[in-house]
Image (cartoon, rainbow, N blue to C red):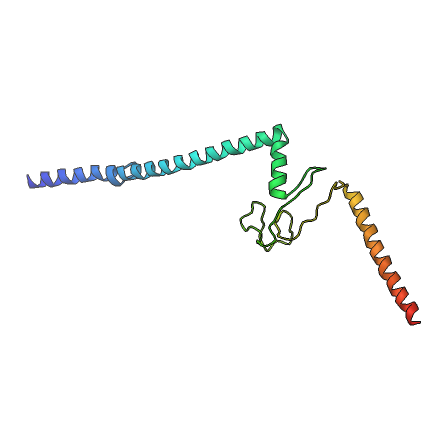
Length: 159
């Protein structure tokens, strides 16, 4: 009788082992349910992000308002004929939390808020890249000619 009881307990333990610790056991099922809950949360967050991106893509494809908004706030651009005027108190420093502020390590100052005095150009002229390059070349040539004339005038004075 003792042997039968021992064999039955042994068989019961052998049957219970896969139920608790085996491949499809309760512990594994519990781990998989936790992983499923985590993945469901990640998927919900990604679906929300996808909806936002789809809306942004639709805005960018359907009109110019979204493109214009990005150009203004992220790149500091303006439309032709617009005049940018910034009013800054002479005694206060530039705001540090500006939307367009860039990192100080950046070489470009485009879009940065400055407390420097403001110069307003009444009707800025839009030029193509070629026109700008030609204008810059002419300005450089004029500067070089002025420097050369200054050197020549100094030589005439001496000699």
